Length: 231
Image (cartoon, rainbow, N blue to C red; front, side, top):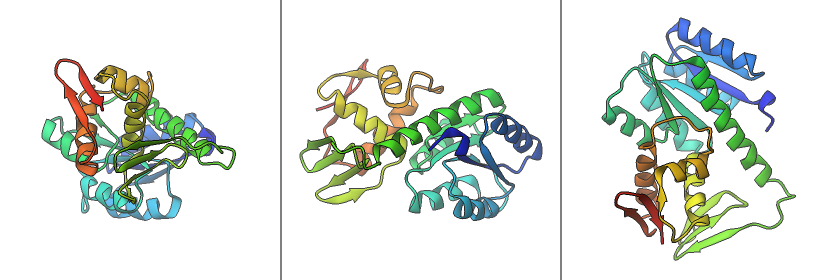
């Protein structure tokens, strides 16, 4: 997918924030749709199938956490970034556990949000190219009952497909490529999501916890004082 053709959905009930994000995203040549409620956000998501969703947590009616849960129930690949005024760890962890790829705490710089969106769009572009017929040599990593298929961007456990978010898959793929090596959080961030990824390194901890929950047969060890190692 070319970045100029990418669709971004902004679900934000504060019109000043929504309009500001709309302005900055359109400057990048992106197609932007705005929703001011969870219900409208879900409607536009079903209609336009955006590549990235910028999702306010404190929405009227259906809140952002529930919107994220409903999106993730049918679409594990769309990138969901939370916009939240809540800076408590519990809220951040809950959002990531529901399937969000990232979060931005208000007040934020619109340039920072655009930078994060572009990172996710580049990842989506790589995913699209990997899924084309020209990618004839699929790379598969077998970890006991778990099989990671890089070409199909698919993970199975005992033959059953396991739904991972795009960010979870990229993290697992990077660990597979460096199997047996102890990697720091920074090395994981740079290798899995790119050196221009902006955010808290502790985000890795939540995604690792999600991989352990979804793939309990993986031997994903914590290396005290360093980070993680896939054995």
